[in-house]
Image 1 (cartoon, rainbow, N blue to C red):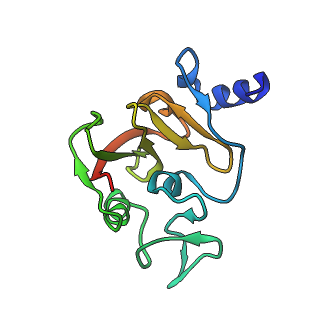
Image 2 (tube, one colour):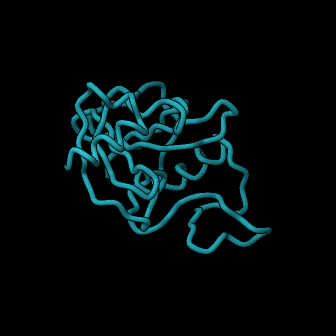
Length: 152
């Protein structure tokens, strides 16, 4: 990772500075953080509707939906996830963390890695591996809910 890319990412997410994190991909518009957390690196997941039609370029596993935590939990439920109590690593399980802004609107999702760290897609930028709370701040808000499912 170039020093310039690292500086730009840490400027946007100051919680990364001083913590171990690593770049895991090149930037792409192919998918976003919600898709990445869901295990999909081919679509941009977001409940973006115009009336009953999904906005071109987006994917959402549910029908027209507001941007709420319950809707995001329901979207991940289509993949077998359900709410759980903590970010603790569980043998044989997968976990997702959903971040929200001050209005409790989802802003970001991260997926837990087998070593207990987390992986996130930074919008149209790159994927990174990081600590759970390292992205909290102005852009993504705070971690609000954890979801888990058995590993398949």
